[in-house]
Amino acid sequence: MDVSNLQYLTSLPNVYQYKEIDYNTIDLFYEYNVSEKFEVNLELSEISEAVWIPLKQLQLEDLAFDSQKKFFEGYLKSL
Image (cartoon, rainbow, N blue to C red; front, side, top):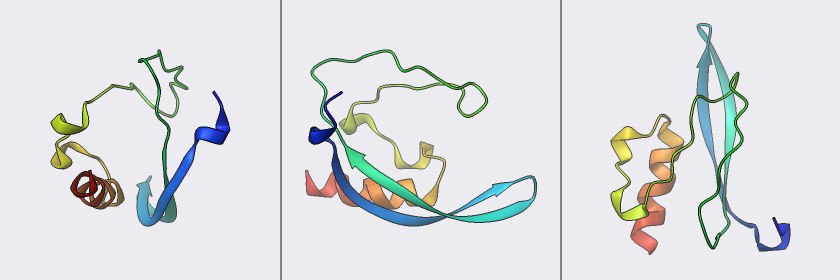
């Protein structure tokens, strides 16, 4: 991965609930274009799966966090 091609897009506030406690967080959004799909190495204690979804098929209601929904709503309109 060539980090010089990593582009910061924005950051948005989010509230993440864990064990009935709300944590105020900041979600960072980056863009990195790849020439082909690759296998994502997962830390199973943090994430259960990674999937590749074409942007045209992305359903905002399927996203877990409001910050993600807000980001992709604007991002998809800008394409």
